[in-house]
Image 1 (cartoon, helix red, strand yellow):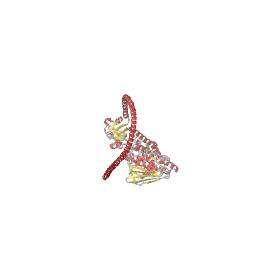
Image 2 (spheres, rainbow over the protein chains, first blue to last red; image 1 turned 30 degrees about the vertical axis):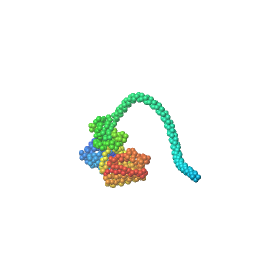
Image 3 (cartoon, each protein chain N blue to C red; image 1 turned 60 degrees about the vertical axis):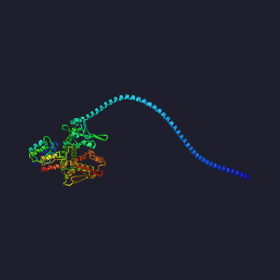
Image 4 (cartoon, each protein chain N blue to C red; image 1 turned 135 degrees about the horizontal axis):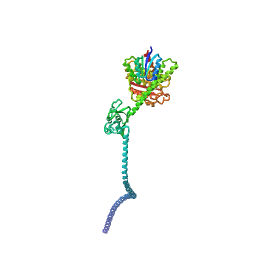
Length: 120
Length: 476
């Protein structure tokens, strides 16, 4: 069965590009452009991986993480944010202790192996 | 006959006797006379001597008399001269007296003028004083003058307005008591650390370097920029004058600028992230050698651009004092390898050798992002300012409770006379401007500021055309 990745990213160009890249690897992709849409998608179906942005309108990434914890969803999350400061990282960790991954500018080449890891 | 004869002979004998007696008398008289003559002669000799002496004395006297006469003549001449002079002086005196009379009249006249002028000048002075006071009152910045003990002497209107105190309520009181100062966290600055204390102690100007806050009478605060200068009369310190300015507006502008920077860099980052991810995913595809090379270069360039944006943001944060180090465990070797990978393309293109020496398991508790920024900058500089074929050596060691990182290159070096300018913003050494055009002079400025933030120190030794070694020491 095709693995399912949920993308939460308010920058449509970036979200669509990610979707296209992932689709190439025989992955089913759902794209949401704000936290509220993400939560609605999560309620419908828990994906194999959530790629989550933090700064989003309506409901931000922290809100989405809070929702996942409150619903005790078993959902691996990779946080993809430009906010790589420790406060944000700690907050993400707090919200969902396992399965977090905050990207910073230095590890572009680590991103794809990390995604692959969750989709095996 | 005989009698006659006898008598005759007796007569003769008598006569002879008488004669003899007479002769004897004459002889005696002659002797006496001779003696007397001798006496007279002697007396004459004495007299002659005396006369000679007298004559000599007379000669001397005559000479003296001549001298006296000459002197008298001279004196007479002098007296004549004096008399003439006296006559002249008398004439002059008369002239002077007349002049004095005229001057006295003039004085009487000018006293009246002077009195008038003094009145005018006093009015002028009052005007000037009023003007000074008006200027003082109109200075938009708060002004407080204190004596040498820091007690308030005078304040201007702006000061009264800014702090909500009246001058009368402040005068004579300790400045540091009347105007409490806090830092950005609201902590009260103790008297010994106040600028006024520093200025009075060090007799020099002091200025706020970070944002400080003044408390008004009602306890509310506002951000201030302060300059305190000593007041001297001659060489004696008599007090200090403090000028302060409400920088709420500047703070707002600064905040707006920082928000703009933040928004701008996020706006730049998002599309850049898309580009980077596409490129990094492309790198994993089966590409031809040429394609792979192009994609790799494009990816590196976009990574560099991301670094530049990150630095822009970081500087903006640094200058706002809005940065607090966030401590976490960092595995040094892992981070160093990551950083060095970022420079691989440049390094290979320029035929540079890079050696990393770091204990594999060395962990340090510090701010990861800040440490990465420091090392990235140092390494980037070392590689940038080393000509083809050179070598860069990074070595890490534990030194007591500190970590020591040396970044050594065999590059252009920094000219001796420019070395002290290294921490300046936008400074670039004169010997590298032409061989290495790309460079902003912001990297080391940032490094020096960040090193301070993580509680470390940085130093370097450099020799032109031999190379430079930067040494970073920071707590582990």
